[in-house]
Picture 1 (cartoon, helix red, strand yellow):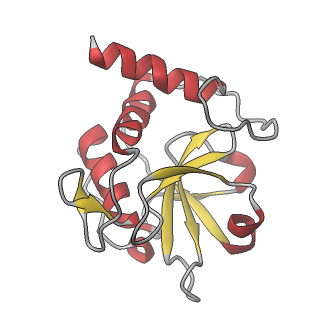
Picture 2 (cartoon, one colour; picture 1 turned 180 degrees about the vertical axis):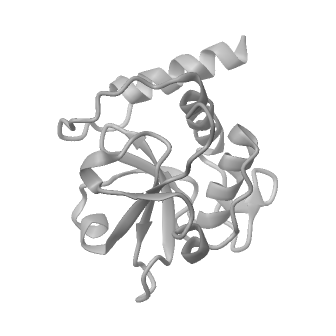
Length: 161
C-alpha cells in the first residue's frame, strides 16, 4: 500500500500537483514509464535526509553524488561512482531542453566544473543533497543561482528507461 501511495506521489510531483511551487511550462511531456517512476520513487524516499559529506545511504545521510549513486543503485541496480565529476562522464549528454525525469544535472558550485549533481524530476525541478546543515530537497532548475552554474546534463542508459 505504501508503494502505491509513493507512486501516486511521484505522478503528483510530475504533474505539478505536489506542494512545491510550479515551474514555468516545459516541453517535456513524455510519459513516465515504470522504470523512471521507480527512480522517482527512490528520489522521493530520500527527501528530508540530512546532508553528510561522503554519505551514501538514508541512514548515514547523503552528499550530492552519494544521493545519485544510491538512487540509481536502488532503482536500476546501476553502480555509479561516488563522485560528481566521474558521474558527469556516464551516460549520454542531453541539453537543457531535452531533460527527462531521471536525468542527472550538473553544476559548478565549488569554482570547478561538475562539482555538484542532482536528479531532474520534471516540471523544472531537481532533487539534490545541497550542503552541510541542509537536507535533500527540491530546487527550481530555472532559479538564477542554478542557471548561472549549470554545467550540463547526462542521461544514464539502462534497459527499459
